[in-house]
Image (cartoon, rainbow, N blue to C red; front, side, top):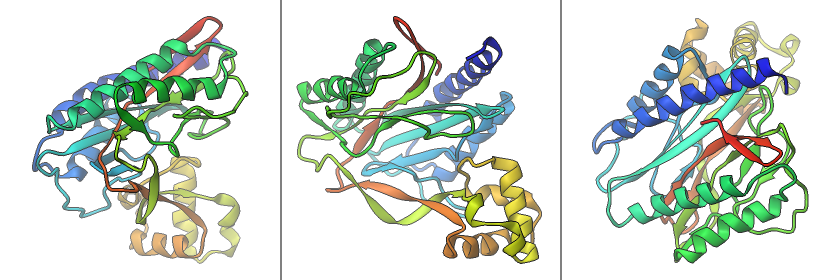
Length: 300
């Protein structure tokens, strides 16, 4: 990775870190989730970056992939555990980070343990570290504290304009002998729940985040208004996930209805909201790191 690219990553990381710190103060009982999302996304743009995906605001048993749709009136409930997951890119070079905010003393230990597991994993990673060993470090840290990792959520390698490119970083010990690579970028993200949880997530019936599959949406086979929306999505997001909230800027008439048709015909990939199987609260902590020979640099 050349110095110019690395500087773009560090710049994106600095933006993400600043916005993440401000996100803590946004999470308050009664605040609309959409207000948190839009505030985070606006801060990213005001700092000179672009959202790499819609800001996720996930409450309690909702572990991932919830970003409010237009006119969503959902608010932060009392005693909630709220995850704020945000991404920043500059010219397609992406960082991904997340924090959890607990409004409940009973749920705060989940946040503390997720952060401890993240620190342990980041300290352990260096060029040549086996993926399965990273998962073991995360799992051991969480279980020693008396909690349970979410086994089917993982961290991930990040490539240009590809949020989930290459290897996955497990949160449990698995027999994966592949190794992290010097110069590669990875998002490390432990997810933690109580010991009586299922330790896994399942798909909800709803989806709030989408990604255009350009191979399934050849513009020549679309109606004019569909073609206009697809071209806007292609040009604006370049294969990265997006929210229907962002489609109003396309100036296409009734973009949400057109988008719904694209989803139904399979031209657009949807990410189901992910919920802990036993409806137990989940905490998340996340950094993006750049791997070096003898360790890693935290970008976020």
